[in-house]
Length: 342
Figure 1 (spheres, one colour):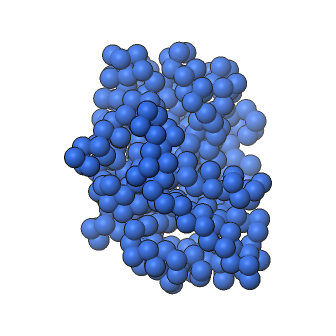
Figure 2 (cartoon, one colour; figure 1 turned 120 degrees about the vertical axis):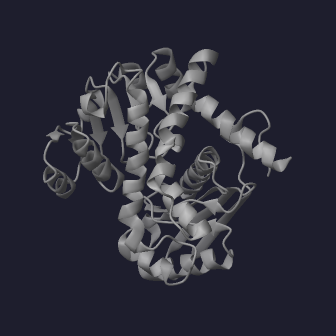
Figure 3 (cartoon, one colour; figure 1 turned 120 degrees about the horizontal axis):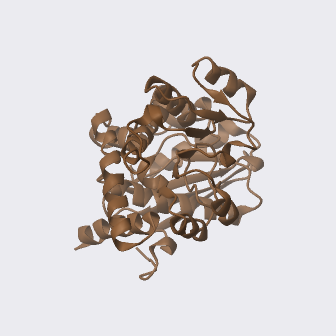
């Protein structure tokens, strides 16, 4: 794989496929970042992008993180991603058919599921043309799988935060669709009373039915003085400015690419705010769905819960080396891939 030997954060993908179909308005980038350990796993996202380069960069960056995610989870797989320019679509159904056909043509090199902006109908259409996708009947299950890993990570954090259990943690959950909703539900079941926020009134209404939640305005959720801030909507939430102002003692997010840039991670570490790398702690979905596609049996809850002990070891080693947890986690992921290459 062509890569930067000095900086894995900038490693180049193994392949970037561009899909264009003028008739249906499809413009998409399907990225295979690294298949050293096995087929590339990654979701399909539909969103508006300012230009093609922004869509490509998003797919490459997310695929890179999926490589790290699969490696740290001990899976026989690498990273991939598909980014569809939703702003260009003319016939969404036809675009999904084209995309499904292309995924099938790769012969299993790319294995996928829904991601940000992908509807249940999108996945149904794509699944009608390829075997290599987690079916729509399992989509909500993937969100819950991710939540299992996030709760395990928060449990591992409790000793560092001087708390006996998750129930005693003050937690702020940003975003209540799929992962965020499942996380809020599981936290309530554990006895916690998380703060929650979402821009979507329907999502808030559904969450309120859980009981035990404290709803705050979206503009306030990232500013609360809590034990754990959990961004579960879009990525890039924590930039350098917010990293300097954040009042939370730890960050455990379900969103991909929570940090807007490397500087934000460095600032959090200097402030000793415990940032749990998202590609480690939100891996529950790929563990469940990815293992299902690989072995025919979905990843079990106990396999997902191992995220907690992994995070505890990461923080112990980061403290010993005085190294940001994200940088150390990437080092661990890359070392496993290098060993596999021999």
